[in-house]
Image 1: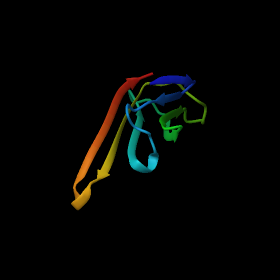
Image 2: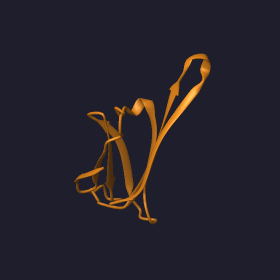
Image 3: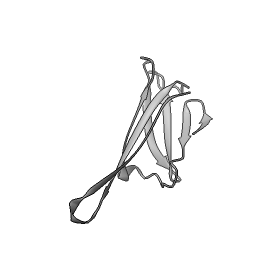
Image 4: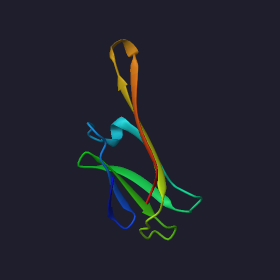
Length: 88
């Protein structure tokens, strides 16, 4: 993970091309800090942006987790997941 600006983080998922249509990703501010946290894809990587309640970029500790469901033949399902916590 790399901090790319104030409240902006970029996550590379090993051996994966992050596309939001293929994942369910949740990111939250840590330690009961009021914040708006958004996630989106960019160039195959997960981007996490954090804002204060006034909409200003804010660096903050956060947690995130994502799950990818891969549908296999005969309706079997393989779940891949990634999680991380307490990043600033």
